[in-house]
Length: 441
Image (cartoon, rainbow, N blue to C red; front, side):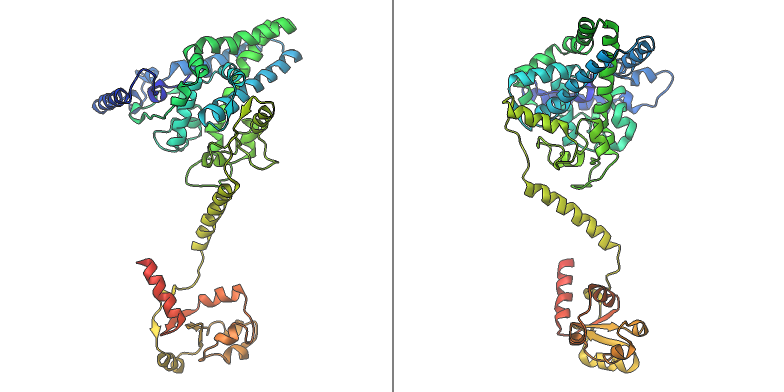
């Protein structure tokens, strides 16, 4: 399964870098001279050329056949239980194997666990490890760009399934290094024999198991085979769509990945996607004990019995740095919407004599911390009473404001800042204004 036009090129064992780059150059030149079908409008004459027919068969046609057959196929509880068990095996092989082990190298695993993942990962009908890992690394490298195979900016449907069902534009072909995958004999063997392994593990194996154990060959084929694979596909697709659509962004909001418990429930713990895109090589998706991530737990349990090792985690310091930085961005955006008073650098500079002259014609001028404020509109509102504020008009009230009479609150300081009209020359406020100008320049 997959779109070879956009993700089918790999660092091949037999090809040198020069050969690969030359092929890319020739491919790029080819599509600058003529329009690819993906760039042409859909018409009655060419609609079939837009379709990726292999994926339509694997993701749409076969599940529809399974749903139609289910109408005349009774579901035994034993077959239902086996379907759930095989669903868990295949689902975990995608989340713990294809994704966290091979795509992100979040931990290492000995060959028995890798063989398990390769077999049951194929049963999910989502492509080989080599193809899946390559396209997923491209997704992380080019998230939310035209080179992203399942670009979330193109809509929920496109990122969920549309990208697979239509032919992509080869103009946006991208590449990621998968030399480590090629070095794994299990990955090479599965890729070379993928179709045979996929059909056996997806359809024949469930049929034989349910037939032998429960005398339910047809139920095994329909429920433990076709429909089970369909549900796994849809759950995995939610990581590309739902995880970029609903939830919060506690680590970074420059791109679409989000954290949400609903996505985690649907995808066996892959729902804390904002965290994952920031810290992709962490074997965990959920970092808090109450967050749902069974894949993390299973990887840890495998490490306890020696099947997995070298489990990677980012430092708590790095994680909390990301949290604080994102919180600061949110605070900065909130702060930018508020009136904090005129910047000191934008205020005129008055001599003390000029302030005294202004006080003769303007009522309500007072200096605090080297800044002239016009409090005339606030005299009647002053909580301490008008006489107290009037006693400071025309004077330097710094001492009174900062605790000589009353140690004013943050709210009082913020309100006072909105009344600024000038800066007194040779004051500390003037130095602050000069520093503001330097930063601006």
